[in-house]
Amino acid sequence: MCAGVLVDESWVVTAASCVVDSPTVYRVVIGDARPSISVTTGQTIEAWEIYRHPDYDATSGRHNIALVELATPVTLATDVWGLPTVDIAEIADVPVVGTRMQVVGWGAEGWNDRLDVFGVTDTLTSYFVERTSGGCGLLDSSRFCARSSPGRKLTYNDLGGPIARSGQVVGIATKLNVGSLEHYTQYSKLSFYRAWIDSYVSSRIYLDLCLYEPGLCTLVEVPRFPGDCWVCNFELIVPNEGFHNIRFALPDLGVSPEAFSKAFAFRLLGANGKLIARGKGNGQEAVLEFSAKLSKGNYKLQVQIFGQSIAKTIHANNAKHPFKFTFSLVK
Image (cartoon, rainbow, N blue to C red):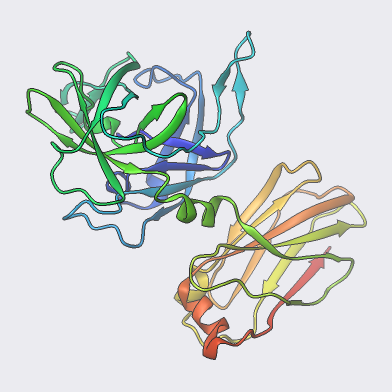
């Protein structure tokens, strides 16, 4: 239904207009050049969470960008010659008007009445376009326009897909000018949104300590508000193999249960960095439970904090308030 760009092993950038439902509706297929074939040769991964830009305006098309967090990380891959077949995109600035760039897409082969969607072709194509100063309607500093020759155009299922120069991705397709002899496409500049993307993808670390037994921890440095993504990394030492629960709780912050439940996400990683389990906040506390035994050894527990309500509470009166976590490792 749409395209996207892999910007991290667990994150895909796409158009906000592409993702309007619950994340459970979507799957991401990576490394497969023939999407209409039911048995994929690539990786199919469920969407874990979707973050549309907070200022996205469907009417004007401004800030038409979204991040899709994957349920499990992508496996990067190369071909027999060592060239990447699944790789993370490198973001670059948009070149000046008149510069040639490259777009990639499948295009549509017609409307499928049974499925009520465009049918996607089996041919992944690439062609050159030229940045223009007009032809796409109203633009601002976050968007730009490019023109292709007659017969060369993206279609609706290619929205969210990349436009690149010299192998670096500079934008994603967000709006089509259908019916024009010269085909114009509007793109969101990825460089404009680099800080917003990094706030999710390249999380800052503010706390790192070892938990040998149940205890109380205090976040000693509070991130700036707004804009920073917050991640606390805990080294978790499991002394003996067994079934374990990790319990996470907070004192009353004076926010609603709904705001609290949306503010936290959890990941448990092995010593090699491989994802083992994940969970989300729920009500006034959050519990991450494991259905399999944990072997003896060291693990990393990541607690990721979202939500402006939580941030505003922590930053009340511009003071740095201690933010306390309690964890218990229960056999």
